[in-house]
Length: 104
Image (cartoon, rainbow, N blue to C red; front, side):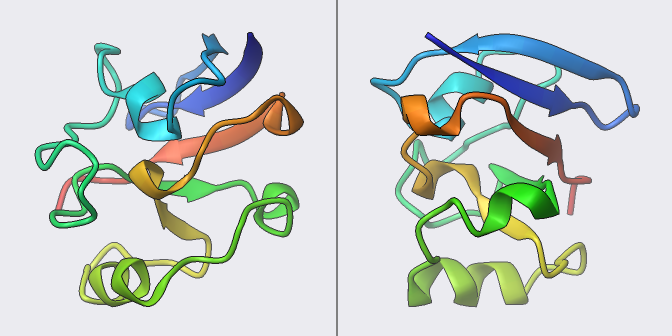
């Protein structure tokens, strides 16, 4: 297990044990303050939108064009926006800090 620091929509930070067999979205979707993940990780809905702490952005794999296209269409898009379904959570991401994006 590795730690994920998640700030919910109310600004409260939570530290959770992340499962490195899952994507970031799979780690976040069952939390009361987590992401909706309506499409189940198919990169089709953007309901798993998170803001990645800037210090972690370079440690993540680059976003694919489908993810970029979905994100750029959101009114809540920021430069540090990512779809959590597209991030494989690994031991190297221990301590990853994200904030759940506002609802669209």
